[in-house]
Length: 214
Ligand SMILES: [Zn+2]
Image (cartoon, rainbow, N blue to C red; front, top):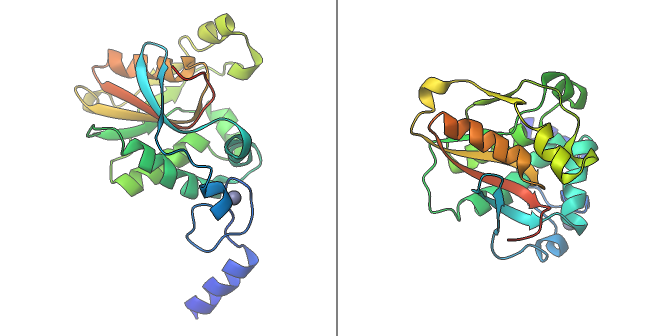
């Protein structure tokens, strides 16, 4: 009976390639054509404050489409397939992480969207890599979105917008912060700074990189 129900659900809601939205076989992380576009190695950049960040893709073409669909067009289920590639990128780090965390959203904004895309990615990556997920960061100020600003404004816009919790378990731990995209690197940098201040060793990973490669 459960098998039949699963079959019906699969035919009503087929799995889709997160990059081009075509139907794919169950369990496939992407269609053949999109897979052939995947880069061979992670892209390396730095969040402000010189914290290293590995990303799976450049933020362009099908990869930018994947982020937009996932984030703005109500496809939270795409976290599962995107996280498989992100987990693979993260495994390129020669580092043993104690915790995974994510860039938080202001609670009101998260309620409006219905989900925080970075938290969903972090949850999936935590399962795949078997690294505990911890909610270390809080968004304490509802600042305007970064993409509406120039470089200098972006830098000031993220100052003091994050808080930290669970400080007791953070000290001396190696933590990976996950976000969907690194652009200016100020947001991730601010998150790194606050965790570092609490004596954590911090690394970052994102699905896409929208900044110029260093
Ligand atoms: Zn595809």
